[in-house]
Image 1: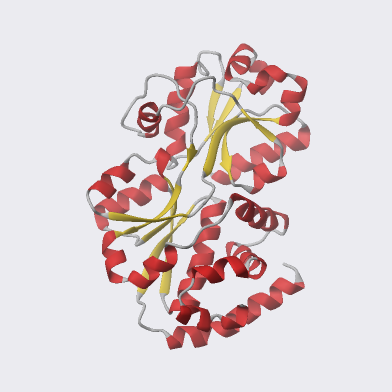
Image 2: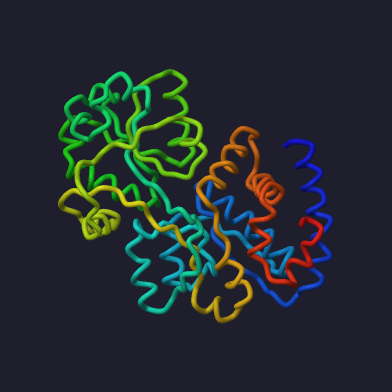
Length: 323
């Protein structure tokens, strides 16, 4: 961290105790920390604001999309799911229709971008690789491998069905499933470092796509919601082809929590990041090898005019030293 951020982090810590003591009415809050970078930043920022502005005690729950939704369905916990990509989550509509969850905000206000990608340098040399058809006709030019999502991510199921339906597997391209989001990101960085082929799934906003120029592969077909939702469901085998949508990315809470803590639900209904803001935070985090908490400090000290508008008047008073 820079000296400025170290001093800012210290001042945040000093201001905290007074705010927590002043507002003890907010109880324990459980909140996901999904296993990808932007969600972890959303959680760290929200946790700080809830604890220091509203006096909550926040417990973060490491998770990913499918386990988190199963937990909400079966146990009613965690209270808050901080970054849910609902296009790849069939159970979202089921839980909402059943009244178990309440949708509060588009936490990524520009929407989430999912796609199959290849490096720009590959397309510069072989323009045909900008399309699925061109890749299928030249699998060796992308290294004969498709980089897929890890277990627990809904995109793993989507990619498997679409790879089959588009003929990726029949073209002899290996579906390589990564063990974590970190190894998926590292594979892109390694490819660029060595100017090697790469073909697979990724999403934005991310530090990786902000740092490395990638080309979104043209699928050649329009988005079909029915096919896409089936593909994302591990219990449904999708038939047919679909493009990727620009997806809504939501903050949801259990309906019980919204009733129990309306002031916190109101706060979370305002928490939203543009892709440019999130990309800047994630790029800083990666360049400085920062923790999630340090990235939250970077956001709080860089964009006070943004997050101050999310707060109640009492919370603004508690956090006045930062405004």
